[in-house]
Image 1 (cartoon, one colour):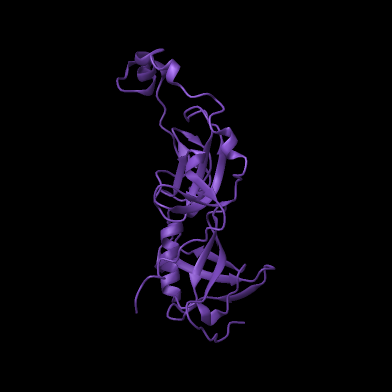
Image 2 (cartoon, rainbow, N blue to C red):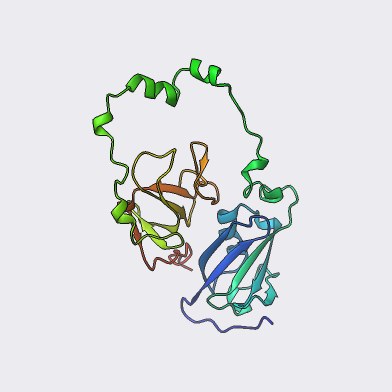
Length: 239
């Protein structure tokens, strides 16, 4: 059961966040215990797209038992006595939400525009035309297929990481080569904040899934893996 928790200083807690509609969504997020539930919802809205007014939060312990409903938006998170490793579950109550119906999980639900090969060949400014016009001009400049493969040895899917430039933090979601990527090895990252360029799909090929504008594909030399917890956007605020 929830209880009054005495909070001192800048104590924080690392929670695993899941979502009722987005089955592939799972993130470890650090929260200040002095943050109100309203502010927690605001932070989660930026992560998963569920509006604050349509969001209900449930807290589960590290063995999966429900601890409490975080129903009072004016309470501090610390009131509910969360601990590192607990799970914060987001329930989207809006039946017309962008997260409903599996749209963000199953791309097969999205109606796709198709163009005939003949019509595509007649279009100007396409990638196919670009390749035809360039021909073999840059053949010698192409990087080898194993470019930066050695730098991927210590980078694994699921690792926390920091990407340069910009010290952008996130989670490794993909390591390898791709048919819609330039030659060599790449690392796909789900950023903690919407500072990316996509949701894990690049040129029609899905390499991983993440919230919109949270995905990035970078070379391994830009990625450092290690203990890079998510930054709390409220930690620098003055009260």
